[in-house]
Image 1 (tube, rainbow, N blue to C red):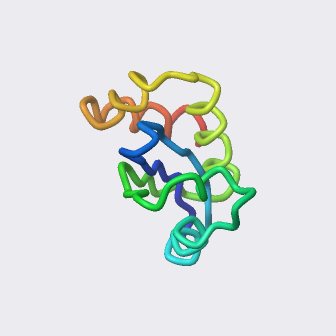
Image 2: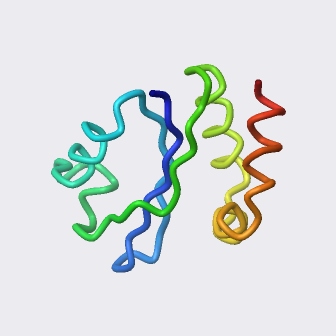
Length: 93
């Protein structure tokens, strides 16, 4: 299953956006990240949003789009307005 995921750390008050084809393994990686990895700066990462994608190409394109927005408000709006996600999936089909 190809997934774009967004996790949130209250300690850092930051979002992390990523893509994976094995979500459970990737979350374990973040929880046990080595000290030189960004997600190692906090231990309280929680899933904020998970977007299931049709394939790897779509997932990587959606991840890149969200990262390029560089906006906490945009990320929060993905939850408030689910039609944004639908439009992203259609755009990068």
